[in-house]
Image 1 (spheres, helix red, strand yellow):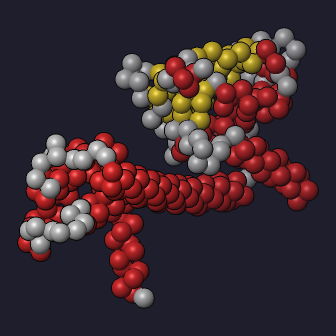
Image 2 (cartoon, helix red, strand yellow):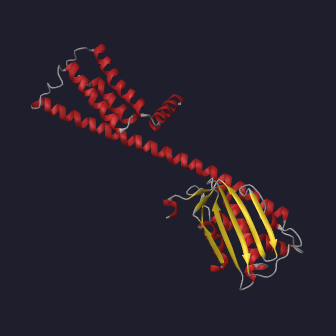
Image 3 (cartoon, helix red, strand yellow):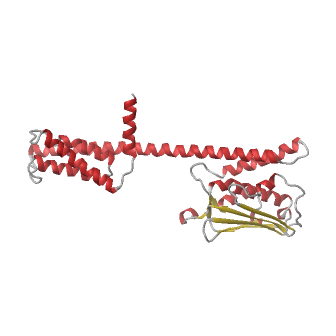
Length: 327
């Protein structure tokens, strides 16, 4: 059983391996040369079935080579066999029994190659599915660890409340916002977040419409930065509705972002205007920890300007969207 398992593993590895054009050309030459040499050594002048030694060539070529090189190996082996054992490549009889034999042989070649190609394609597709599943599982474990770390931080650092009921309500609100942030990220199918979609879906539940003005070029945010960014924007929206510009019907928020000339650093600026006069908070709550530099947010600068809060964030690893992604 172990021997069969080992052989099966070797065959599977051979089927899924991607070979360069040079490697395929060398293998193609060997598939023509080796059977010819074996046939000459075993029976230099075969009385019957001169092509017998070349049937493995058909199977191996279809399994290991791309279609063009496989066809080259098959026709090359046929030409060499005809030349060595039938006297001339041009001496093929195109009538009677020789023609029937040729047609049957060609049909067998097509059948063997077709089955071998289907087997190779199936094995490669299964291998791709398995590798994708492994990637999804690793990403899922990574996401779970990150979420647990955030929950632990939320519970350890706040919220500050005068009684257990207030604590429960505020902590539940934090967990709800975290759940909504996680819903914006789809495991495996999209490792990166896209702006402006990520921010639009984050601020959507607040129902502020045009009072939060977004501007910036379409770009992608690396996966480790997505949840910290979502949580930070969610916190800024919450504070603006409670105490800032969005608490006044005349207030509004400008949220702009741009990529630095190096194309890797993304700057986001949140600026409130038209609201009540701003003063720094009396104490640091959970929200203050969401608006600090952390893994995924390399820098956060939060200022309580009397005319309106503004916050600048830096993300490293962003990139401009391609035309297809922006469409």
